[in-house]
Length: 99
Image (cartoon, rainbow, N blue to C red):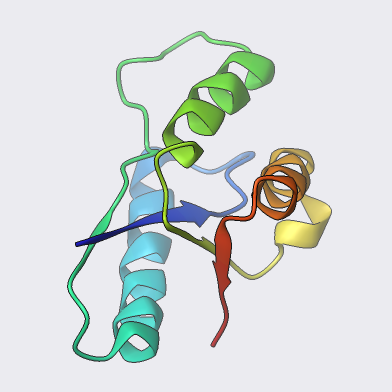
């Protein structure tokens, strides 16, 4: 089963808003993956309240390290953390999913 990491802009959004966006992203991923089995790696950290953006990024990178694929959501180019995740995915040769 393939593991998929979703990189999406999160700054200024509630966990509820992020989760709603992820539902739409997962629909896109299902279309891309067709009949292949996959699991979405969880990067909505509900137990990390009060952490700095850099700590959130560090935790996300730990999850990214387990991914087979990474999907970059709309607007990732403007989000500092997403740009770093993108660079890591390229450098460590994690397959990018594109629709």
